[in-house]
Image 1 (cartoon, rainbow, N blue to C red):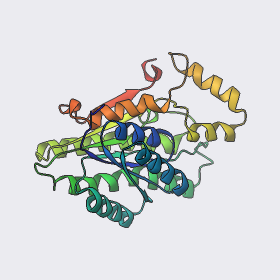
Image 2 (tube, helix red, strand yellow):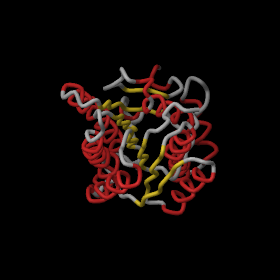
Image 3 (cartoon, rainbow, N blue to C red):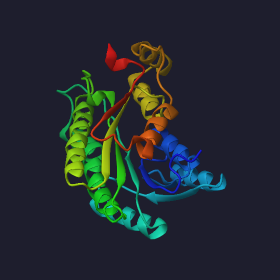
Length: 258
């Protein structure tokens, strides 16, 4: 129950789904967590419940596509907790669409959050983590199985998550060669039962039928739960993974093994 004791973690998109699960688990394991999101009511609730359970948590309204918002989030984190040890770049959106119907506006909106947000977070996290003495930290970027394999209706999402995958490897190599002490890894969930996936199925029509189809796509016979991913994030945030950088942690119920 103390796998990240004393660490300070920022989790973007921490109000719901994977981000909420990671925020709660890291807090239970001893970290001070900064929950960021644009969903203020839900984000405040997560932070308040962590504090009520005896943990340390701060909620910040945070648009990950805005560099000035990143600067403010880092300043608030350092002011409150004095350091940054872990960044979980989790905030993301999904838009399903045929490639010949996708609008440029949709493409740019998705990229601004899924890819620009990861770039900006990584940039400012490195700056903050290099202030640690000795310099050290862990950056965890949420990619997806869709960053490893294609999907006929998720072209923009595939492109954004594929970008996260290779950007992670590039930055991991730079951080290692510069001896920064900062590790950078990506996590690749299969379909996880979150509000984003449920909303995606609602837009497609029948949620129950969609859930059954998603379950069947995974060799283990069902989609994942948010904690399945949160435990992977916890491993990468902890010192247990001190020799792990530039890696892609796939947690997908066998989806990409087929």
